Structures are given as C-alpha cells and as structure tokens.
Length: 143
Image 1: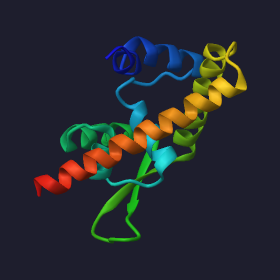
Image 2: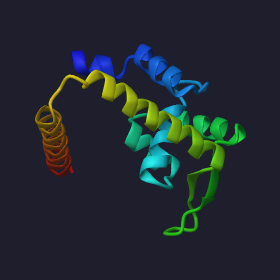
Image 3: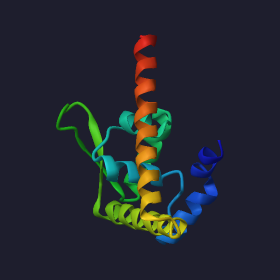
Image 4: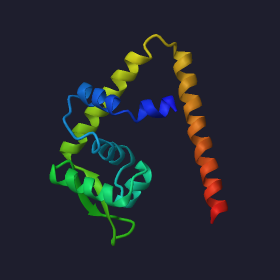
C-alpha cells in the first residue's frame, strides 16, 4: 500500500513536473506519457490502460487536443475509430517528463549497485508479468 500511495501521490507528480520544467494539469500528463510510450491509442484504450472511465479520458483528450499536445487521427486498423497521436509540442513534453523521471530515479538509486538496480528491474518485470497473468486468468474464468 505504501508503494501504491507513493506512486499515486499528487506530491510525486508535482516533483516530477517541476523537475521536467513542465506546466500542465497533473491529471493530463499520464495521457501524454501513455500516448508517447504506447503509440497511437483510442480513448477506450487509454481509459483501459490508465484505469479511468471513458468519459473522463475523452474530456481530457479534448483538453490536450485544444492545448495542441495531441491530435486525433484515423485508426489504420479500423477506420471507424480515431486514435490519439502526439503533436511535436506534446512529444517535447513527453521527452522532458521521461528525462526528468530518469534523473529523479538516478538520484534515488545513486547509492545502489548495478547488481541491485538490475535485480530491482528484474523483480518488477516479474511482478508485473505475474499480476497480468493472474488478472487474465480471473477475467477468463469470469466470462
């Protein structure tokens, strides 16, 4: 619970945005990061990925589009659907946030050995893969 609280903390988001020298509503930047990391995504895809409801994500995508950080484009796999894509302005914000996150993690882990950092990365990957597998099995049983 402590880790989840830390990762979801508004204070941590503010520290990250401050380090990145980015001024954006902290509720909006996860959408930019998701689009930058995962590529073009539909609103429903973003909602699933971020664990938020469709209408909230739709409103936030509209705000980011109005700010010039995102654009909408036809989905190449399904022309009936649109996806979000980063604009050049949005891409520069994503880059700044990713670089700031790397700097902050570098500070936090500066006294860790390479072996410790590699072990942490390996265990986090294993944890995520395990949780995804368990969740998928529970979803299949529920259907």
